[in-house]
Image (cartoon, rainbow, N blue to C red; front, side, top):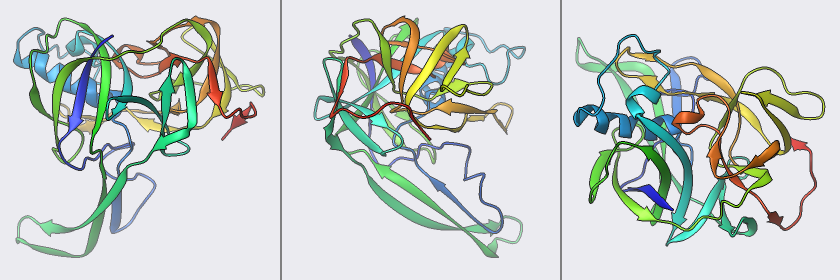
Length: 286
């Protein structure tokens, strides 16, 4: 499978809600990186290339949360490569587990290193430090790791390109790569990017999104923001999401695809699942 891959060139920040944690109030604030970029980040990179290459035109009438127009295609991912071995992310465990021939092997995992930096607030008018204001940013080091996505659209990636990647204007190398992924159809799937949902799940952990009935066998539901709209200078909406690492069962056979809200820009990406090693009990929802 031909994928577009991103290899971080320095410790990187992938935000979850916004610039800093919306759960904190007061003079101290913090931003802590996720272990994978949100689909909005990747869609934004490709959209920027489309705009620069004039393969799309800006349309002010489009909804501010809808990147599908400038993306000009469909996204699926990420598949994570570490030393050319395939892994997928588990949000609850905060680890990457080995993916081989449709099987998740939880006995073989990798973790990233965290680096925290402390900052202060400045008074731009007086050019002095604001007393009592402090923030911290925790970056993640993704050495020897690549985040790979299937993009079906009109953007041509030729050779290598250095792009802005995540928050704080970090950099990554962008290129095409052939990656072997088992996409044999199955009703059971592993979530690899946040699957956005509306409404409440039923007592049996079932929910219907875009006419697809989803049963959550194992996993976690959390709040996810769609990112920041640079043009309008405002945050995009926040949704509840079935997080990466969750195991779901569909009412139909699925393959390597994206489902749920904003699936066109890569939210709700799943891989068909044959088994998980070692075996675990079902209906573990947090």
